[in-house]
Length: 265
Image (tube, rainbow, N blue to C red; front, side, top):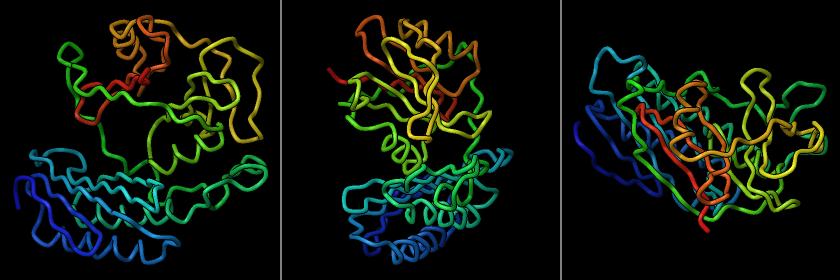
């Protein structure tokens, strides 16, 4: 199969992009129906995208992505594999793990005594995420700019949304302070951390769930943030935009270019 098309069985919508093998869309529909069959609560929609890279030399050229709407709660998973059918199997595993998590962490958070609980594990894990395509730094562009009203929530709920959506970061407004903030997973420790605009306090833990960074959030223009992202090699940078005074995120996309997220005023 080639091109981009949409098929629908029950509440599962599957889109194919590229030379997706015959039968992969039906296989994905069956796997997703099996996953949502164990979900408590109404599943409103399931959207799946299967993408086969054009280059046969690409590392793990088959990617599968799914977004499930469980009565207004969005849950997402994104994986890559050597074959499309393997990618769909990994997608089922990862999505099932995320859908079975409780909406809120139990007392003490997901990490008790430094060990992740069963509900905090990721099924297929982050090792199966797609690799970013390499684009020379001079050719990278901001190809997507998203602007929306940030959710006012606690850091604990921000972490839950971060994990449910399978993102590297989650931008939100801290309910207690009213400041633009971000939660993310520290790649060195595997623990979640939070950074916020405004005055800094001492290093602390939020209900044992995540550490709060005392490193100042840089104030810069978008152009300066692009330079910082390139120089640091980080997957994203959180910065205080000099033009708006709001917390924004510039991040690497899987296609090798950049994406920008800004709060709407």
